[in-house]
Length: 406
Image (cartoon, rainbow, N blue to C red):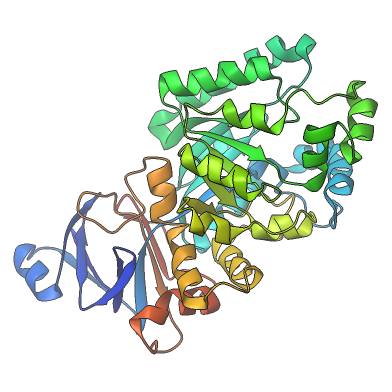
């Protein structure tokens, strides 16, 4: 048994003082240090630096590890030039992205307090690393393929990768399904995958309306995607529409990534169906996709997470860097309220979306903690979320399932 004694504890989405936490693999009690010492006299006491804040471990819901070798290779500024550069350099980047590179990417997330992440896997090459990293991993096996003639083959490959991830469930892997996007997955195999997710209660996610080019293509078979599909797939018609794609998920709560180009009406529809959004502000900026209307999510009380995406469209995998970017991007939102929502977006929100036994400091939850220190005493309890986002670049200590990993 261990008792940890921060200056400030993030409890029920607020900050409290003079509380300690007793834990082994799970959180056993939350009370004053004096009472916990009487209850657990043999417990080891973990005392902290001044101005310390104890959070539940952070959760990064959307990461592509397979492109972690990228630094200056891919082209930024607009979505289609970026996509062209991905296709041009894909084999070289993936070939250079060995286990050491991907483990380094996982370590970067660890340093920023991430105890659980969602890995979007196109080929399954990062599965071994995900079984070895200390973090828990929601392993999203990605389904892609818009042509009917190859649909069965690609779906069979997807099922093989999904089965492999299921075999790793004892290594901290949570098997899951990812739909690449509306423009790249044929409706027939999409329905198979959604039905499978519903039957087996597997988490499911999908890229959705990331760019204006995607919206134009799905609405009118026009725009920058027309040349792309004519060149690579000899087609001038999208395989689905926005409405058809959204309705495909009506029976399965889905985590939609980006949704930058979604209208208020579309976001309201998704919210009413119990879906959620993964917000990747730095990726959206680098690919010229625009700004997610986070105020619409707030108005509709729609759950969202903040995620880094991969190093193919970001410069770090630090979730703290991502929160700072989001804080600056949504410049009209009340500052302290936004900071509080952003902390929820990497703790309780993703835990609830994916039914994880974490994301909160609560008796019975997994002992996943991120301990940070502020540079000075905060002016008020209400300001701690904001000051954390502004000033913390690396966690002091990190616990996963009660084990100290940093």
